[in-house]
Image 1 (cartoon, one colour):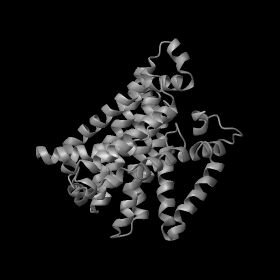
Image 2 (cartoon, helix red, strand yellow; image 1 turned 90 degrees about the vertical axis):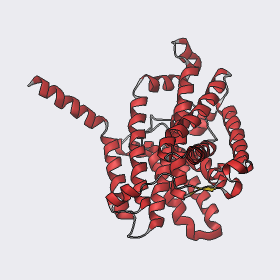
Image 3 (cartoon, one colour; image 1 turned 180 degrees about the vertical axis):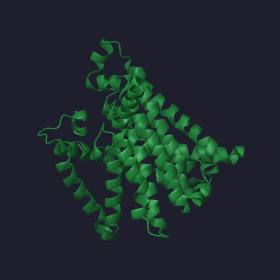
Image 4 (spheres, one colour; image 1 turned 45 degrees about the horizontal axis):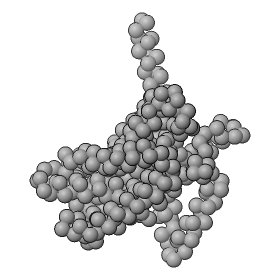
Length: 345
């Protein structure tokens, strides 16, 4: 009887702990039913883009939100992941699915190297941002300049991550099947993120972010934990790269440009709420929706988008998710994360 009670208690604790993730995934699982009309592949593509950018934002949340390493080469790492899978699959003649983890490892190794060097040299947030922005520009030039390998500015076609079998099983289009593949990936990321932040790694990240010198004084290896965060974030981005390429059917250097990826991902993270579980999901969903709604605004689109973002940041300075929790709990003051400007000061 006591064993049953203990088991029920454990299951109940797990259910409560992951209730937020379960509810979010349930909503995302039925979303295509309400959003995608029959035969409308464009709407399905928007949903796929939403999950791709949600995954990229989760990665930036780990590396920037929790350890103040402002990676401004998310686009470059995404491109490295996409080109690695496509080029190796073509050269080795094996399934691209087998090479997706390799892309994660390659991008993760670059993130690890950047984090290790910057942590060893005690670089500030701004210096890391400048360093990674320089890498972003360098890799963008390589993507265009290495024509024999990357296809140059005209890119290379890519359809290696076939999901036709899943699409047939679901009775849906390939885009919808890819959406569910990405949803499974996002589910793993959300669970992994929660477990990581509730482990010794999360506590170390928090201590390092608050005061690196104090963290070192109590025995926390700052270089080690920053390197782990850098590897984790970059590896996630590397995994996403091939899936992004699959959704577009092509790999073009312009897909991974700073203004096409990094700006969007940073806005999504800040808007949704840094250092929150669901902030990246909310931020990505809202930005994809706003961007789509403003398509009819023509030449005024950029100006309207800028005005909307200013309004959103004025009212949701700490992010939408922390603000929503404040309203839900009836609190008068948020105890959660500081704004990005606070972190840069």
